[in-house]
Length: 59
Image 1 (cartoon, rainbow, N blue to C red):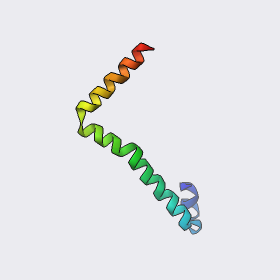
Image 2: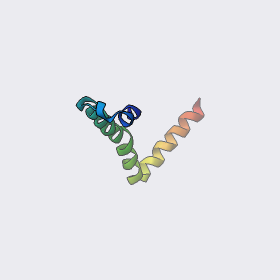
Image 3: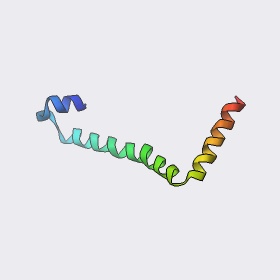
Image 4: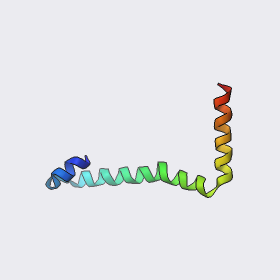
């Protein structure tokens, strides 16, 4: 999609702008905010990593 917009900016539609915006918001909500939370709460990150290691060792 990005290549189409860069190569043919005249084809940029409101729907394309909305789709790009929704993709950005979804990425922030699903990827960046959870990572920020875990970085701000290192004790929870350590617990999560320990649980993952335990689960991997069981199998």
